[in-house]
Length: 219
Image: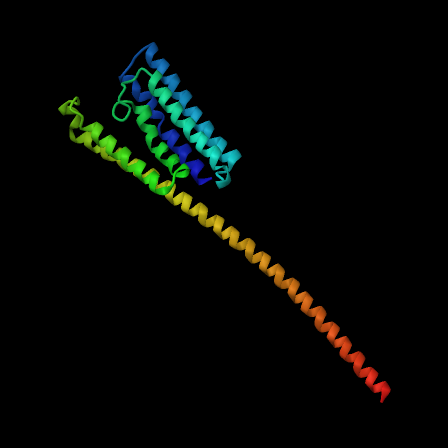
């Protein structure tokens, strides 16, 4: 539930990015990009809702989770290809760049930890290298832009850590549930043993009483 709420809040947080593209386009082109952006956000939200309601974020559904991750990547690439925004997604495309933290978040659940960490470092390096491209004007590298670069980096790292904490907590809960099931099974077994011991003790007591009575009558 916590993961679904956080991702949903991030989608709401990204809504201003859809309207921020107005400064790049106007008229019919802007409306087309806006509708395309809304469609992509709704698609991503529908996939997240499917994972939450149907898959329940279960480990045994890892194959389906990986297929959905590839589907997200394909949808993002398709949006970048067909959307008439600047073709520098890490720098100038607000819709694509705003989805990068989520992709890092999703990658943690379909990759081994070391590979997801490598992906995180690679994205940070790419963003930083893209920022210092020679074709960028000096004005783009002002204090405000540097602050925005740091903000984007912090958001990406935050989502990676969020995935790590959420997955660790989920596995801890699963381990606790497994131990609780084993404990209940052990208690049930102990109750059966106690019942068996009680029956054996009762049988021995009846045998002893019967033997005493037999000895008394014989005497």
